[in-house]
Image (cartoon, helix red, strand yellow):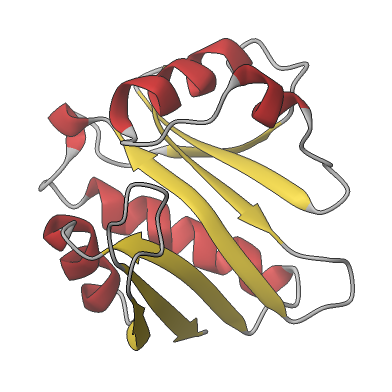
Length: 150
């Protein structure tokens, strides 16, 4: 199987838009409503997909303002069948290359403290924990704030 993916910026008019919303519903503990997605402002929200053999297998949603050097990783997803094969690192490498080309120097994110798999990945690609926030999520789960300097 080809593990070299195809990196694509997407918007709400793209054919894969419904698939991205479906992936969000299937794989996030707190998926966004379709209204949340519709309210995105694509002047500063950037939706990026990862395709393998013509199939969308992941996406990332990143926010930053033009001229700013800091981005916020809002969501990143890779379908479970594609994990632990180096594909996530390939996708992240493309994202960081794109971010650097956009003038971004630092990325921030929040992640659920119990999500050790995600935390391990973030640490592997260079994110560092900034702080732990008790009860950060609506169900009382603690959050970790992390940052990465590109």
